[in-house]
Image 1 (spheres, rainbow, N blue to C red):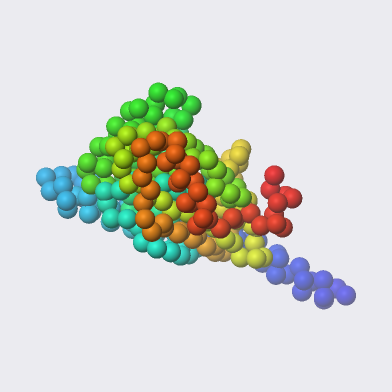
Image 2 (tube, helix red, strand yellow):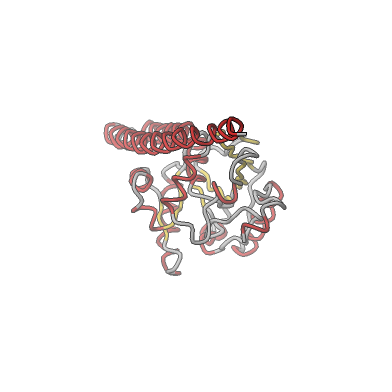
Length: 278
């Protein structure tokens, strides 16, 4: 009996140091790669300032390189259905995690509209500021007006802009109603709005993606990120809509986008997870 117990305990005991090493290694690499990407972004943008087209290409390439690098470091495999739109564009997506930024960065290299406190996050916040992320304080309704003007300037500058219009990240059970305030400019000018659905999956033996990858509710960022680094690998899926949506009424536009994204969205929460996620 003792040899049997020892053989059962040995794999578990040896896996713990391996997982700790993975966490430390990945956390360090995320910081180093983000710092290097941010430095290259800023340097290239400064040197190419007189040449707007080349500067945009450099900036987009840096963002995509950063996202692809972070995805590899974290063991994230990205699958894409459809094609991202060509800049300039506005794209609306559902929102599941801070990892959504990495996925879209790797695939499309866009500018993001993100929560205002992201600017203070170590690593990701610094790169977000350098990359021209538009920050919004959703607790202040009037803040949507200057944000819309910043979006207009990004579009006029030839950039793609990603908006997570649900207003918060979720556990991935469904696509929640889209907030229409940030769609006011797009509706007023009847601009085409592209859309995409994002989702995640973890290996069967690991913690479900709704808890280990999705970041929602009152989950603290630090412990969640360290637990994410513990995963050996996971998958992210991105499904782009074929045709953009347009409407002169922002609330109708928001409802149409929610329906379109829902049609492409595969719920992250499974029936086995429902009892433990809520």
